Length: 122
Image (cartoon, rainbow, N blue to C red):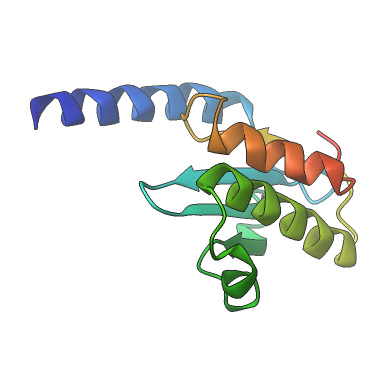
């Protein structure tokens, strides 16, 4: 249990360090990623106005059926693609990427690559 707290505290320190520099604007909102043990969540946020513009996860009703039977990294890639497509519908082409203190590999990397494949620039 102690190791878990140390790992969480380290992630929160990384999150705070990154968040000092990374801010979402209306022209270039922030793509924020959170990963739990089972699911991955992503949202596009305008920090200036304090508004979440687009939010998707592996729990989304539209995606849930198509994600059955896939590995978690493949699910993350699909969520990234769907998020980019939803962002494009709202006129969002560029974002700043906020990995939220998580290391940039595995599911976090797969989500960002999926968003890039769908045309989101960051």
